[in-house]
Each structure stands twice: as structure tokens, then as C-alpha cells.
Image (cartoon, rainbow, N blue to C red):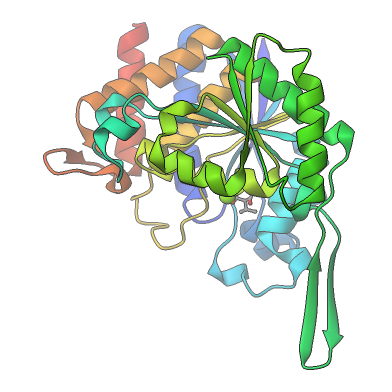
Length: 360
Ligand code: IPM
Ligand code: MG
């Protein structure tokens, strides 16, 4: 069986971490006789430089005819001052999410035991953390109407936050279904004391919860959720929230795992799902073989699990990551004294090597 994978390295460290994930998939393909077919395309600043636009039509088309998309990261200082419709983050990333109908973003924040002391939080606070953050991905402030007006004394800028019942139901249902398969606890995060969209969100969640009596539901205001995440993160199993709150809380949750370089993500909901690390293009360390490829490699594992139903293979990747960390290898972002510092390619090779050993 052939699996067509659109590969979009993008910018900055994207071009360093993606090859490592592709190599890992290549290893698995060989061992298990899966025909992974990779087709690379331009996105982000790299696409602007080549074609003038951050999301070329061919790139979106390639994604649509593929079975899954593997994305690195987009953006960088070189393109930061471009007009808004050309900015890589908005036009490329949000364009891909919208264009592929990916309304749900899964960001699992799992602390690997070997990294317990890599977190900036105390050991007993983070030990055993395993949270699934589910972020709504195609609505809210990021997609609502934007405006800029000249007024006396300067300008006025407007972003609009919009949610419909239907948009809320589909993401929250995924939250309940996910919780059902895990610890059966769902925390819905909103700002219902202030925002109308949040009030609709909370009403909708409450209504839907009647279908899931086996799942323990809590509602939490986003400011409190931010505090609780660092106070006692183990109270959370699955969190579900709207786009911007999820963007912020998932970055915060990543630090429970030691580094955002450890946080993979799956964007699902459409015919073709997209897998990308939760971090950005990290221009400050780009091109130096310093980036942590683990978030991307774990994103590839999520691809195997969610898009291709290859659970055993996904687990093999995750186990290989655990083994390499247990043996003390670290990229700079998760480095501690007494451990062995390695670069991007070495980390990828170590995980690939471990994988081969475990299947062979
Ligand atoms: C993320 C990123 C993006 C987002 C940016 C780069 C547009 O922060 O994937 O979390 O906000 O979704
Ligand atoms: Mg973000």
C-alpha cells in the first residue's frame, strides 16, 4: 500500500528537522514494507522567495491530493515586514489549515521521565504529566474580519472573534471522544465571564455533555487555566478550547515537557491531515544543526497513528525517542549537566538507529 506524503519544510529550522523525520519514516517504510512516497513543495518565506507568494496554488493542490502533510515551520525576520496577505504565518499556515479544513489541532504535552529535570518546574509538579490540548484551528480571532481605520490621533485596529454552534460542537465532540479514550476527564477552557463567543461555547459544551455522562466535565476560565497549568498540571487530562486560547495554552503546556522542541501536533478534521511541530522556525538557531527534531519526529508518529492507522509503527517511533533520551542524549533546548549534547542530525540518527534495533 502506498502512502502519499506532502513534505513542506518551510523556513528556518524547518529545513533541518523535516529531513530527520523523513529519514525515520524511510527506515520504517523499509522495515515494514510500507511504500511512503514523499513529494516536497514550497511554503512560507521559501515560497515567497521562489514564487512571490507564501502558499503557491501547486503546494495546496499537492496537499489536497496527498494522504497526509508533514510541515516544518514558516516565517522569519526576512519576511516580517511584508504586507499582511504575504506574511508566511498568516497566509501560508492559516491558509493551509483553512484550505484543508483542519479545524482541530491535537497537541499532546507528555513529560518523558528522562526529562523530568529539564522542566523549569519542580519535579513533583511535572512528574507524570500527560495532557492532550485540543485547540480549535479555523475559527475565532485568527480568522475573523480584520480592519484598520485612520482616526484622529492615530489609527484604530479591529480583530473579530466569531464562533458558530456548529464550529463549537465539532471540536468539543472531539474533546469528549478523546477524553473517553483516555482518562475520561475534559476541561473546557473559555472566558465566559466576558466574551459572548465564550458564553455560546460554554452553553454548547454543557448541552453536548449530556451525551457523555461517562466523561467528567469541568469549565475553566482561561486566565485560571493558565495558572492551574503551572500550579498543578496533573489535574488535566484533555483540555479543549478555542483558537487563540489554545495557541497560548499549548505553548505554556509545552514547557511542562521540558521544551517546546518536544511538542508535536496533528491538525485534523479534513480529508487530509497535517502534522507539524508546535514550535516555529527559530531563526536564531537556524542553519546551525542545533534544533531539536523530536517534535517533528513525534509529529510523524502522529501521522502514522491518525492518518494511516499504523499504531505499532507510531509506537516504535515514540519508544525509540524514549530510549535515546534515557541514554542521555540531548539537544541544546533540553540539555542538562551530565548529559550528552548532540545536534539535529545526530539526534535524528540516534532515533533511527534505536528504531532499527528495536524492530530487528
Ligand atoms: C502555532 C503558531 C501559529 C499559530 C502561528 C505561527 C501563526 O504559533 O502553530 O501555534 O498561531 O497557530
Ligand atoms: Mg503557537
